[in-house]
Each structure stands twice: as C-alpha cells, then as structure tokens.
Image 1 (cartoon, helix red, strand yellow):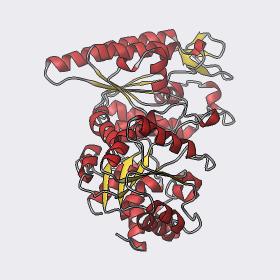
Image 2 (cartoon, helix red, strand yellow):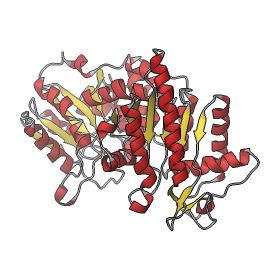
Image 3 (cartoon, helix red, strand yellow):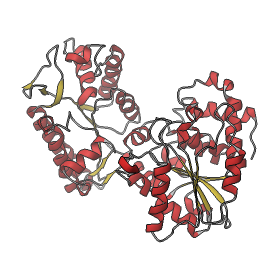
Image 4 (tube, helix red, strand yellow):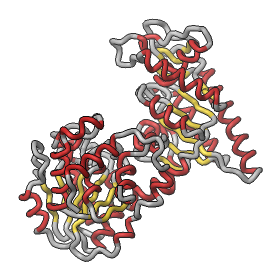
Length: 471
C-alpha cells in the first residue's frame, strides 16, 4: 500500500509519543503474526528481513562472535525452503563507514554450511538517496533480477543518516522530515518488497528499518529467533520479582524506573553507578550525607548529576510505597584494592566489598526461601533477572563481587528459581566465571531486554502492533 504524507506523519507521531497505556508486550505478541503465517507466499517472493547484523569484525574481515548472525539462520532457511528471495538489512555499530560486506559473506557461507546455499548472492552497496529519502531504482533493478532462493544483503543502513531520523525527534518536528520518510517507506515497498520480517531482536532503537518500513507492507511477521526470545523468554523475565542492576551507565536508572512502575519487583540489588546514585539519594532522604567521590565531579566520565540523585529519590520513595526492598552496597573496593565503607572525595569504587558480598548471599537465601514457599503453595516458581557487572571485572583485583554473584545465580537456579541474564557484560561475566547452564536463559541483547521489561513498548514491537491493528 502506498502511503500519503499525512499517513506517514501520523504513523511517526504514534511511534515517538510516549504511550504508557499501550498494550503490554504479551498483548502485542497476540496480534503480531509468527513466521509460519507467511507459508502461503509463492515462490520468488521478495522478503525484507531486518536482521541482527551488529557484530564485531576483526582483522581480515573475520567475524569474532557470530551468535547474532546465527539467529538469522532458521528464518533464512525457511525462506530458501519456500524459494523466496530474502533481502537482509541492518547495521554495524553507529559508524556509517562500517560495511556489511563481511557480514554478507559470512551469511552466505553460514547458509552453505547448513546445506542450503543461496542460488545466487547479491550485495547492494548503494541503495538510498539520503537527501531525498528515495530508494534508488538501480538498486531495485538489481534486486529484481535475482532468481528464487537468492540471498540479497543491503549495505549498512546507518550509512544513511536518515536511518536515525526518529531517534530524538519530537512529535512537533515530524512534519519537517515527513516527506523524506514517506519517500523512504514507499520506496522500500516499490523497489524491494511488500513483505517484512523482523529478526532483529537487539535492534531496539527507532531505526527506520525496523519502525517505519512496516507501514507500507502487505504482510509482516516476527522471525523464528526473535519470536522465541520474546514469547518464551522475555515474557517470563517480565515476571521477575528480583532484579539485579549494575554497571557504569547511569542511564540504566531510566530502565530500572520503568521496570519498577510495572509493579512486579519485590527486591532490587544494585551496584555500580546506579548504586552510587541510589546510595546518595537514600542518605539524603534520611537527612544524612554520603559522598560518592569522583562521581560528583562534572569533569569525570563517571559523573552522576544532581537530577539523577533526584530520580533515585523518586524510585526509593516509590519502592517504599510498594514494599520494594533496595539492597545497596555497604562497602566498596577502592582503586588501591582496599575495602572501605566510604568513598574518598578523590576516589571511586571499583567493586563491591566483602560485607556486601555476604549481604548478597543472605538476600539470595531469603529469595530462595520465598521461592520455595511459592512452590509449596502452588504459586511458584519465582523469577529473577540479572543485568550488568559489579565493578571493573575485567581486572582480577576488581572481579570478586561479580564472580561471587555468578555463584549466587547458580545457587538460585539449582533451587528452581527461573534465572534470566541480560546480554552484554552480564552475559560475558557468566561465560567467564561459569556457564549458561547455571541459569535458565542468557539473552544476546541486554539493552533491548531492559526496554522490554518496562512500561513503554520496544519501538519495533510498537510498529508491528500498530500495523497489525490497522492504526
């Protein structure tokens, strides 16, 4: 369906506006079709696949970690089984100069190794006019020539700055770019395909490729991997009553606040910069003071601004109203390796200390007892979610807190608690100090999962839901 300027504007405004009353993830998944819903498409159908192509490419174009690319294999195999023409597109990092050519070659070889080598292979290195939003007819003609069972890969979507047009835009500003966006959306349909499959679990920003493209499509669906991650694992993670939040990124407070607003959480274990903000806020709410060292210096990378302290106060007060227990560090490992209950003005915390590790052990024991009680009363099991690491864990002298907590994850799992771990550093720590068998499930994308646990929908879920509801 060709869309008008007005339809494009309305669609984009729906995408960027905050919608706390939007249907839950579970309700959205009830209306978004599964991949098998496309089984009736005829041979030769061109299908756009938004993939997780954001991988690290090393020397000689070697892919260092292929788990995200492997997530595409099941969906690509189904495409070849039905003799369709899959057109994979996505990004690599935020650098527009990073090419998807190594990724494209890897996908071709990966599918050949699975016994379903593409009949033909086509890499499209230039496909959009960034100034106008038009999809190049030359790219469309190249794709149209590909026979059934061919594999097409488009160059890095972030080669074009327009891809990120909806990232920080305000609703009132959308009319200024709506014509470009309309041209882009209509061009994707006219030049490439009218069927869209989202297999980009980690692609949780408002990229045009995952939020605007569905607008003009005749058919949309979730890919095999993303469907499984969302329906089988993310929906269960959303039931977590214990959440462990840590890391250096202070903006994780936004994610934690959203999670708390859903009202499922009973216990929060915090460390890292998040804990520093909460620790200072907690002291001020009690009429006391707590120094967080260099994190109070605006010149420092680890700076925690006053507005984050105020946000932390709101969260603590909300937690108090809802009987949420916040477990904050009681001691810290400083830069010289010593343990301290305070942080010097010119110092910083690099890990949690031994008393905090002991406190964590006690809190986990309490949660296991809570889980056992739920099970005994036919209401179990309990769910727990772990995200991040407790310190500068890549250095041995600051790894103890993180390493010891991996043992607590195993302890919970062994007792029957459903334990879920976000991707990124949390997943890396689990691999370094244990293995994935210690938990129920380890995700490949931490940022996406954090968004999924909040009240605001993941952008691509919002887009697919709007499409399926005919909005």
